[in-house]
Image: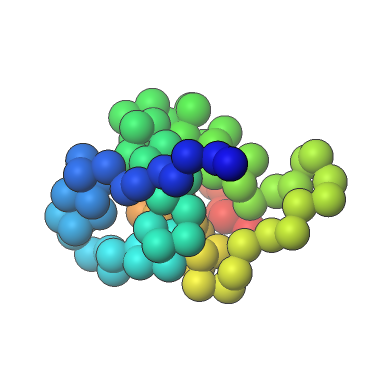
Length: 91
């Protein structure tokens, strides 16, 4: 049986202090491992973008996907944490 991953206190603190963004409760509750990884990668925009892309695009096939609430949290974090590149719009 896999070990249960808990949300790190650093991730909890970080999400609670993000200005202008609602706490990602669904993501934290359902996928704390992903929430922890986002916080660990927050200062490396290239790796963070790649991680968000891997979460939002099924390149391996057969994934069951996220609940709507989790998907919304992931998208909100992506929009907030990654600066838009000039001339590009998120789709």
